[in-house]
Image 1 (spheres, rainbow, N blue to C red):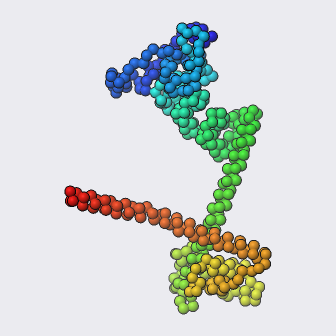
Image 2 (image 1 turned 90 degrees about the vertical axis):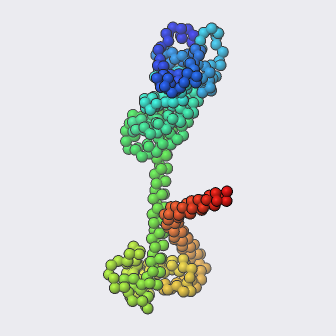
Image 3 (image 1 turned 180 degrees about the vertical axis):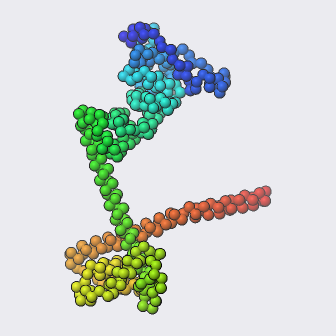
Length: 383
């Protein structure tokens, strides 16, 4: 039946650059006559939509696509008839671009932009991984609100995981606009499982964003507590604009401290803690409790309590752990807070070291160049 159909449709004239990597004008300028050899007569025809027949060479098709190799090796009913391979269901121009890639391993931007979806389907069906990678990369860069649902469905059918993930992210970022398209209405009517996967991905993405925001907020809080600990040591050892050690007079400068952003607020809190009447009466207030927790946190972090000038540092170190169950739970939470603040301190110091690393690496590279040049010169002198 294939041979009869092939005989009834006349062959169609195609461009000369279908069977070579470059156009004929470029080939004549670059490739010499000894290297460039004309291909033999085609021994197979590719039948596309609209009755278009593309002459091709079975050896080249079989070497690129294992699926085409199986179709070519399939026995024919008539030995004399030319083998015909039908590739229908896509535009004939897309089939021509597909055959051109099989011969040249290249595909222009115009062909990808015009037939990217069809070429992706053909590359998946006929197992051409190079063309499939090119199509997935190009389609991922050309996603639009109107086309993302179609590309998503095709990526799932073609097992293009990278393109599928990018389409999912695109839908999640522009879902308010995507849900108004015809493609989304088609999914709701005909593919509820894909709709469920998309909604689940959007929910997971939003949960991940909320978790990351919470982690960044907690990290910022721990960094502020770490800065407050350093600022407390600065106030109690060196003194600042309002508060300082008993043997150090406060500075006469009225401008805020330039070392720490929380210095002025912490000084006001210390001043209130020292003069609060509620604390002296045993009632206490919220600001005094906050200052008390800061002093306790400093004592938990401090490594030199014997000579530390921060008030109550040694006293907190000498206190024994309580035996009550609730107190033990509170103590475990407190220890976790201490570990978080210490880790924030380590992360901040690591980030500062990473900022300084390029200068250190540049200096090290200069030294290595100097050493290398010195050794090279000494080796030449020995020769």
